[in-house]
Amino acid sequence: MSKSGIHIKASHRGKFTAKAKAHGESVQQYVRAVLAKGSHASTTTKREAVFAANAKHFHHSMKSHPHSRKR
Image (cartoon, rainbow, N blue to C red; front, side, top):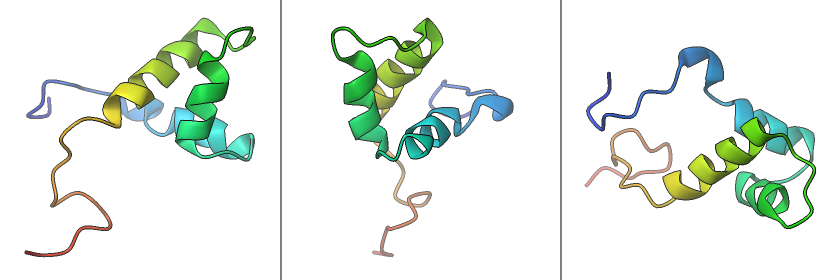
């Protein structure tokens, strides 16, 4: 298990991002669309959207971030 205590099953990693790209939207745009009132998205997709919205605010390690600069 990772240090943060959050474990995402390897087969599920990137699923929501793939769905967003398939709809031609960024992850955050897709989050807004899925969570909008009247959305017909599945319960699973809505749960993934909530996680993605919350994960945006996580303190991500600078080592693992692809756009980080060495300090």
